[in-house]
Length: 339
Image (cartoon, rainbow, N blue to C red; front, top):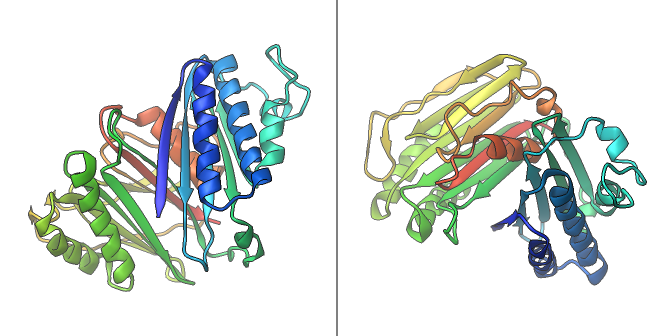
């Protein structure tokens, strides 16, 4: 189960709201008082940096609550289109400031979070990622060298309380299967349709991508319908198998200036579609899979962002959302790369 909250930060009073929301989500996930306060401090520092250095920005706060055997995470993305940081390493050191504060903002975020990542380009803004895991998750085995690390942004249309897009993933030792669904329209009916597609993935993760899309197509006949795409990365065979209906975009990146677009059929799952097909593509060493709904412009990509491919998948997804969101639709971006 996942919950996402978007908070626009334009003036100081919104910091208190962001802090309250983040603390509440942390408490709901079972974080103790100390951990919840650490989350609140990081959110405060992130908001302060947005206002001080960029004038405005937005926070995306996402909780992912898994079952008792799996890891649960609370994730913060702070995104802005300000002047950026000329020297990121210098900015991360406590005591350095380009403003009037003590310069502990990014340093505090680094210390008080389980996982952090940062990306900035001079004149093009900055992106900050902070992540906390449940205490139980800290005793779990680390990711294997072959496992894909998957990150995402899932944001509702401005003015809507729920997002009509959904996504899900299933991983085995050798394969990762990712589904992205964009429910027709907006609001709860769109969310119902897209969540049904994700439910089918979790019920039958061993089906081929084409068979999964066909089953989703049948299951969504009683709903509003959705655009749906499924990609399976087979790491042992170095292949990607892909099938889709509608306007979910998907690309494989193999390095600077190198990308492969994946092909979907026209139509809407649950209503009508062209003959469903599966397509196979090569999965390159150190490949990156990006899938996104039409809440992002079709030209979305990160080849023009130097070094972004090296960052955490959630941070990549956040920068893509920041730079390519249409601003008038639900928006989802999912990024998968080697852990």
